[in-house]
Structure formats: C-alpha cells, structure tokens
Image: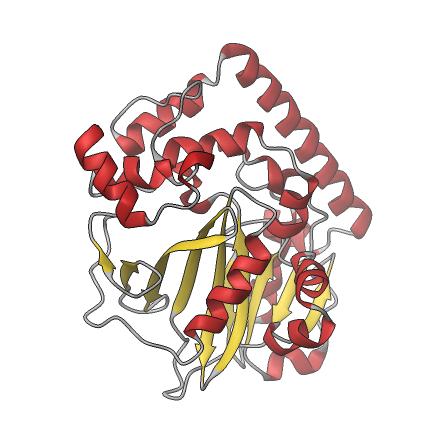
Length: 322
C-alpha cells in the first residue's frame, strides 16, 4: 500500500512532504538545542568513545560537530547540494574548465516520475541531491518500478537531521541521473578525497572498491602514508600516483578556499579529472579514529594558528603536548 501511494505521489504532495520534514526538523533542532543537544552527545560518545566538548573542541570529530551546529554560511547549502554545487564549480573555475571536470547529467527530476524511456537502456548513477549515501548504480534492464520507488522514498525523506546537519535541511530536493565513469579496466574508479584547511590540502584519502571489497589509505600531499586515521576498512596495498595529482590539488584548493575546512572529491581516469562533490561535514563527526592522538592532531588543523603547519607538524605536536 505504501509503495503504491508513493509511486502515485504528485508534485504538490512531495512539496508538502518536504515542508513538513523541514518544520519537524526545525522543531527537533530547537528542542535539542534548548536541552543542550543530549542525543547528539550520546551519539558522539557511542561512536568516538569520549565526551563531546562543544565549548572548546580539540579533536577533528569535535570540530566537525562544532561546524554542523554553528556555521551558517549560505555557501554551505549550495556546496552541499549535489546539483547546485555544479554552478559553484563554474563560478570558481570558469565555465570552460568546469565543464571539463563535471560529470555529464542525463536527467534531473523533482518528482521521480518523469524519467525518459531511453534512460532505462543505459547505466547511470541515480542520486538524491539533498543527502549523503543516497546513490545507486542503475544498470540497463533494471526494474523501473523499484528504481522510481527508491527515488521517491529519497524525495520524501530529509537527511542528517538527527545529528543536526543543517546544510542539508532546506536544499530543494531533486533526483539526478548521472553518467557512470569507469576506468580502463571497466571498473568504478578510485575515490580521491582532498581534505583542505584554509584553502590548502593537508591530507588525502584514497578509497577503492566502493562496490566491491573496499580498501583505503590516508597520505599527505606528497603521498607519504599517514597511519592511525579512521578505522574499519583494510589498507590499500599500493598508494596510487596519478599524472593529474598536482592539478587535482590545485582545483581542490580553489574550491575549498572560502571554508575553514572542506573536502573535495575527485576521480582520475586516463589523465582526465572528474569532480565528485564537496563535503562540508566529512564523517559527520562520528567516524571512529584508530588513534585518539591522530584525531587530536587533525583537530589542530582547524585552528588558524596552525594553518601554515603540515599534518606532520600537528602529529608531532599532538604526540608531545597531549
């Protein structure tokens, strides 16, 4: 019954649902703020193993939560929106350079009921622009009913509000159908994530096997391995070296310049760069670190007095001072 009603939801009903979501999210945020964010403190401690200090944050994860709760730059909304961020990329890089790295879009929908017939004959990534993790690889011959059902479920749901992720709340909801980028072997390419502070890349995450057996590695900008960052996924056997490495750093620093901290994600295939997304709340403040000391060290990078320091400087200071 739910599935049937979902597929027959009209645009006015979807818009009403989004407004109701937003109202509920605002009321939830207000109540929790008045109470001192007790549920957020509980979630944080459960994932990190230590108490959240919002008044004097030191660790990387505490700073992410601090940004979630207190940063209100409208650019956070635009750059979190997986569709609107494309205009931001054009503004920062210029149209010509931006179009070289933006992944082609086949279709954009506000109702997930108007996918063109020819779309079902090709593979595409279906994404919700107002969430994280709301993406699906759709292959030729996929069941349109199930695919549209999932898309409509995304449109009917807000994202991240249990942890007060403000930037997602009021994004005008859309479904994006995007070209699938594959590497020379025909696989989904490695995610390359540049962690930038004050407009400078300080460390990089290489993440492979998103749709298979995942593995990852953290490095500095010179590809020197950093141990003890986030846990739970095996290490990459080899650190990749791309001919586009320096150019990706240049673009990441340009896109992240307005923010104290932002993560810029790319793919590199055959000497060509593709833009993935800008992430403002990397890990949501709840991705567990193997080393508390590293969590502290990366937290130092948020502080303006450390903006000219390397990740190794911060690791050294954390090891001796804390």
